[in-house]
Length: 285
Image 1 (tube, rainbow, N blue to C red):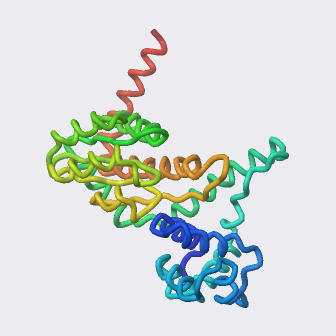
Image 2 (image 1 turned 30 degrees about the vertical axis):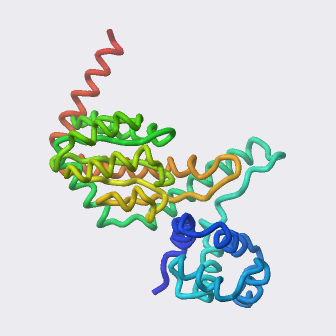
Image 3 (image 1 turned 60 degrees about the vertical axis):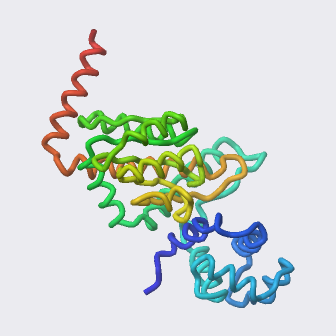
């Protein structure tokens, strides 16, 4: 049974950080090749990049394909999918209509592909951990901190208090006093942010359950976590990967929020009414 074509591009991108600069150059040359077909030979790819055919095979295997032919066929299969054509680079002469379409379609691509690669069993584990946790800390820096605050806001609506930390020193202080009754959600696009990774290692040593939200399943933060929920997005020279990635991560966390609320819907709805009323009273004051 063939895998969902929407997942192929995502699975290639997820493993790019594990490649050397030369290996990544080879992958870029194959993925950007507009005339890639079943007739494209390994020799052609090797000569294009001044590398050996053995290296091309090695790269394909590092990307979790059985070999070059599997890599080539899977990429062709992906290229024919509707989702592959959603992303387009922004050009200097694009109209406002074109800019809007490109930005929105890149976000839609991130959501579609993230949905295909999410591990449902990991998602369920994350929801269980968070529902049972005595306290939930969220660790993130930069743009990822905005994503963390959005979840914290939603959780408070249903009566679950969380704390968002975006300072490396305060994260470490928080991690130092956590225990096995607590949970941490670490959000990092690259998964290589030391300011987040050091605290979650300490939190895990103290028994807290760590859930990582990241674009790269084999990143340092993912390796330090108990549960990993992976998002994906295609890079853009102007927007980078982070913009579309945040949209996908917001969707993952929205789904987690709903899953947690669903576990005790009566209490969630009761607290939601209370918090909504409090805000309404302030507006009318």
